[in-house]
Length: 359
Image (tube, rainbow, N blue to C red; front, side, top):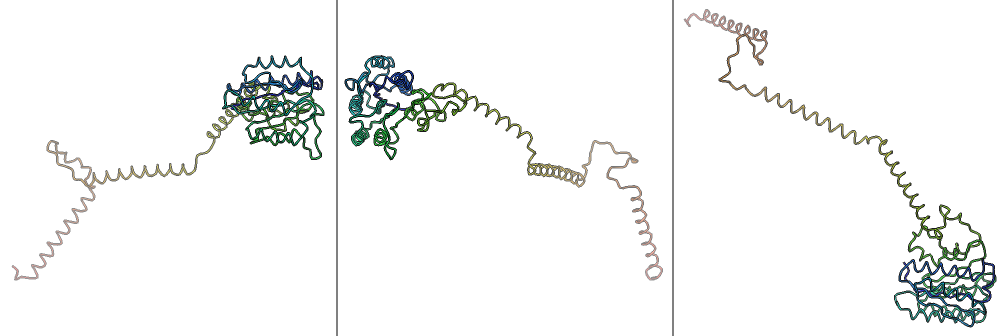
């Protein structure tokens, strides 16, 4: 959120009566000045803006350090009846720098915006003198922006450089100074200015960066690029609320689609084979554990002798006990035992017969 004191220098020379910008150059400039003042004040409530002229009888300060747009509009209206003469850019910049030096809030950074719609003449056409002035501004931490519009303001040299471009480049420090050239066309001067780097920082104070159409390309292509280049077909600089609403609506729709896709994928994804194997192993282990417990219980019951009961009635003789052996097995055991006893008696008798002395 920029915190600045801005001094605007407007062109009120005789060239401002030209109608290449509708309805005149001066009226187009007035609209652009109003846009700058409103944008600066909206970006930070502590910002102040002043305005002065640089033609007529000489540079004149009209309003210094105000937050009231009405004062600026009144000053512009008064200047509209004082159009004439030639511009004096170096003198006007020196006076504007002096006015900024005496700003009440020293925490405000200093900025000068110069509107040039007249051919350079006199000291303004001297590149060395202008570069020297630019270095002075840079030393005093004063940012400078130049809005150049109108046909034939200055012809570029063989290397493509111009006096105003060299002036701004010499004053630039950390990309705080800019030059914008607006050719006559369908776009208003205020539209070109608000979509340029001059006001990009102020606009981004209340609009996301991705909605701010900035950069030198916008200014350079001011003479023929329609609104079709903007997202959603809406220029955020003209209707930021609508552009913001459209972007938020698109983001919400994308979020809903992503949530729906995530829910659908989670319901159709097959179970992980590893999880299925682990679950089967756990079930098998649990079953084996239960079987082991049953075997241990049966073994313990079979190994432990039944405790005699003193109160229970004796079971009938004909009722077999659960632990009794089968009748056939018992009979075979009895027969074997009887046969063994019979053989033992027979052998004993044979021994007695063979040994008569034993009697």
